[in-house]
Image 1 (cartoon, rainbow, N blue to C red):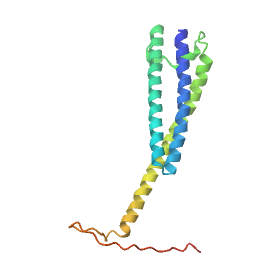
Image 2: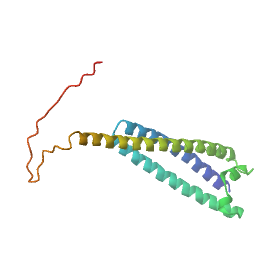
Image 3: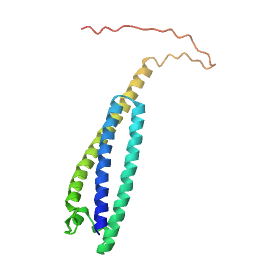
Length: 166
């Protein structure tokens, strides 16, 4: 049983490290969107996907350990919780597990908040770009230099100055 406690504690510590890295990636994602950097955004999305895959793998390992514990205690796996595991007197990692659980709850709450903020930012940015395209299109949608026969008109370039003095 000692090996299972130790393995579970190691997994919890690894998840904390992954969550810290994930929080950093969410922050980088925000920066990439606000700077309109597509390449940087794609890089952060790849990093996020990699980290989420690693979290999933750790969850599978954690679930396997919980199943082994449930078998040894002869109880359903649903009843094996981190709180219960930490309460056992022969578990020398109980304090570490409790601290890990608290830290992970905080991290997960922060990740959820950052994910929601990034989602809203991306939605607003997409909406803003769509509106800008509509404005540009409507500016002179009646004129087109292209004809049905494939020929084009010579387009004269016009420009103007806008005074910003008040």
